[in-house]
Image (cartoon, rainbow, N blue to C red):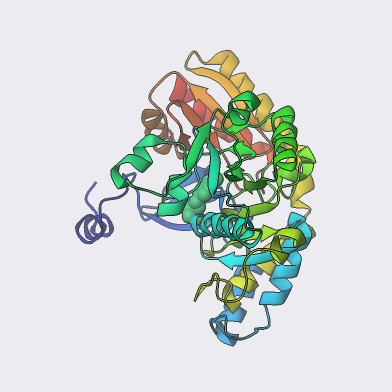
Amino acid sequence: MGNHYMDTVQEAMVRTYNRFPVVLDHGEGMYLYDTEGKKYLDFGAGIAVMGLGYGNREFNDALKEQIDKLIHTSNLYYNTTLGEAAEALCRVCGMDRVFFTNSGTEANEGALKAARKYAWEQKTGRCEFISMEDSFHGRSMGSVSVTGHKEYREPFEPVMGGVKFAVYNDLDSVKALVSEKTCAIILEPIQGEGGINPATLEFLQGIRKLCDDNGILLIFDEVQCGMGRSGSWFAWQEAGVKPDILTMAKAIGNGFPVGAFAMTEEVAAHSLKPGDHGTTLGGNPLAGAAVKTVIGLFEKEHLIDHVREIAPYLTEKLQELVDTCDKAVRVKGKGLIQGLEVSMPTGEVANKALEEGLIVITAAQNVIRMIPPLIVEKEHIDEMCEKMKKVLS
Ligand SMILES: *Cc1c(COP(=O)(O)O)cnc(C)c1O
């Protein structure tokens, strides 16, 4: 499939991605269209980013208006959108103070630094982190150090030291790693990249208690599962297990590159101070407009309620695939972050789906992620199932 758009990318970019042989051109709602006019139903949402779907008129208009008003100022000054975005995000994520970054990776970097600074201020000497196997927290030196895939870390060693990996959903394995040096425990309440694995309530509660009993901070990475996808604004809220530091990104800007880490007042009061952390672009007026508009539209369109209403239907239809297709093994996950475990190569599933006009994203070794825009309706789920039946037969 020769195409000058592909050719230029092939020649001019570092080869860090295996791209599918399609050139996407525009999108509308739940659908994407390529340069040849072919239509794709999107169950990947640009990796859990496009909560509002494509071409949301109000979102696009708000960004255009802000572009004409003011795009960037640097964080040396106040600007008109930042405060509203911070207030709205703190309100929905249930934390007290937020720092805006440009990505999820940077949010996790900031969270690690905040935790270290907290220990440093209190002179506890705590400097180690406990993370989980199969976790994903990013690709920078700090975030990759706490990422539980050896293949992602090994080529870049020595990465940040003092990180131990426990088995997800196995509290005893976490307990075994705790010492007086443990600074923080970091985990995703629902692992995304690792195969859509939700933490059990007992695991989250057990970790919270372990942290409280031992003076350890708890960091939740909700970059993927947060912002409505789990059926609450953030997954910690439905579990009732509150982290000390929460990281976010992906859907909070609906495609505008913005992330954030937020913390409780207790952590904020004893960690990062002026000069400890910063970013030139993070939280600029345009990013602020994106976050504030996304939250406003989620509320106006009652998207969280919609996720709760529609999610059981997605589970039901995925279960139907398991019941009728030999190659569909089981369903896992919750809300609109579900996974279909398959017994054929996931790359083959994604490629065949693409041919059928369906976009899906793979996870771990054997999972197809079902992470559609949150505006998905029953008719789209039915259409996805029809296409997946062909792919898996
Ligand atoms: C995607 C992801 C990240 C990294 O976010 P980027 O915006 O790609 O830097 C971190 N943690 C989790 C759980 C993610 O899914």
